[in-house]
Amino acid sequence: MPVPPLPESPQVTLHWRTDHLLGEPFLEAPLGPATLVRYPHPADAPPARAAVIHVHGYNDYFFQEHLARAFAAAGYAFYAVDLRAAGRSLQSDQIPHFVLDLREQATDIAAAARTVRALEPGLPLVVHAHSTGGLTASLWAHAHRNAAGADAGPDVLVLDSPFLDLHAPHWKRTFGTRVLDTVGHLAATAVVSDGPSRYAEHLLVANGGRWDFDTTLKRPEGLPSRVGWFVAVRRGQARVAAGLDIACPVLLARSDSSGPDMLDNPLLDAQDTVLDVRQMAALVPCLGHDVTELVVPGGIHDLTLSAGGPREAYLGRMLEWTNSRVGAVVGARDAT
Image 1 (tube, rainbow, N blue to C red):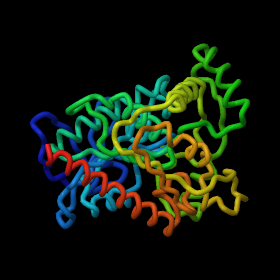
Image 2: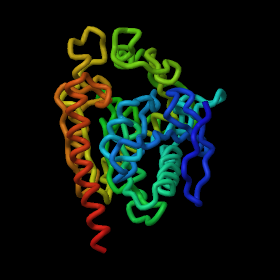
Image 3: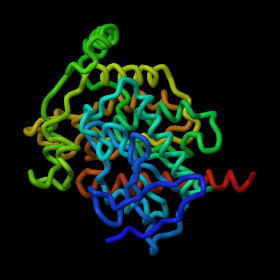
Image 4: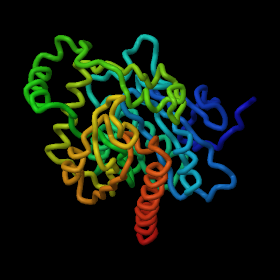
């Protein structure tokens, strides 16, 4: 079935097609080495008050249709970006998610932001970013805090369980990081760690979970982390620890507890089993001057994929906060 034409800004022309993973009404278009996904704004939804871009994490891609619909129902024009070497953007000759500097992926976020601003002129821009995407989006927002126009950072930043520190023993976080940072260029693609993702395995419908996704793009068997990527992440995390100055309002959302990523963990479906929520809480002051913390009891690592109660709590409270901050942005613009 042909894709209906969508209005484009004269500043941007994209080659939209039906999204080959989600199907109609979702659309996808190449965006340099990345891919932009669009959820056409439903006719029965409130007029768009803002635009939002979702940024995925490691061993991940955009498949959360319910997130798009929740934002659209609340009056947001919804987009998502699959970063280079990930999801829809992964090429056969690429190592999945492998980059040597998080600024490579930040370039993809910047391209998505410029494009969405051109497609949705005048609307405030919200970035909703998960896990490693949350780390990268935070660094991008900080780097663009003084930029203007199409190159400006987000007007509002929502972090869903951001990967701000390494969930590992102290020796690995200190000595191990220093060693790899020193010699990592000699073996950038060597594997640092590998193993199954019980978290992803448990989520999958085929295993009795709630969600269906492409297991070649979000792998229950896990995705090896490699030296070059590990060093890039640790350098990014060091910049966070040194203190960022994100200019826009930030929401850091997380579960209320962490636990082991093991199938015999009775709270596997009610904890963050990927990251340490205490580390996230400790780093809240390092992000900027206007940061709100949202704690979701019973939430899992990707709060949007939690069980019904925690998921609805997250979406409801997150949208309530985002609406208020978007309203303040619009009010400030109208006053000038």
